[in-house]
Length: 196
Image 1: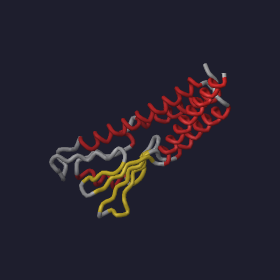
Image 2: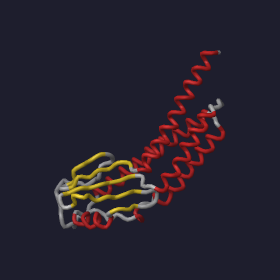
Image 3: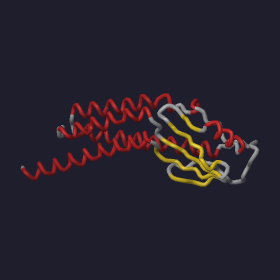
Image 4: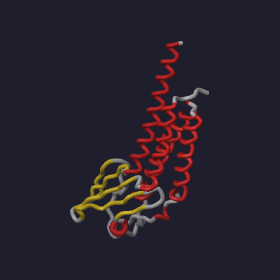
């Protein structure tokens, strides 16, 4: 197994330890604006919590038959801290061992974790926006209220915006650092091969 450069080890360690800060900030945000809420409403999704204007959002959503948002409805919150801790630990071990195959494995784990997180969020949003109470006070035939995965979407008189928050951007930066290490190692290998 090929060893990586010292600078690559340092960068992998930085990328791994940087992810620890994501524990203390929200990962994702959903913001909503309407004529009656020009200042906007927000929902912040953390590693194991949801904060923001949840009570107001739940009150509004009740009229159109959406489920109440509460932490208990997300079993993911119980396992997410352990998953992130495992990813961070694998990154630190990768930096210490310093093998290119482990860097690739670490990068693949980061990509798969990101895809799994987005897929889980999409499926939750689909269920939340489509499985409505048939006895709701307000019913609009054919209307669903699935929040956007990323970007903006009009939902009745609301504009909803969904995007990564600070924690999500931290994880993205960590992934880019690991990708940069793979590029660096690729060019180092190419240069070494040419010099032989």
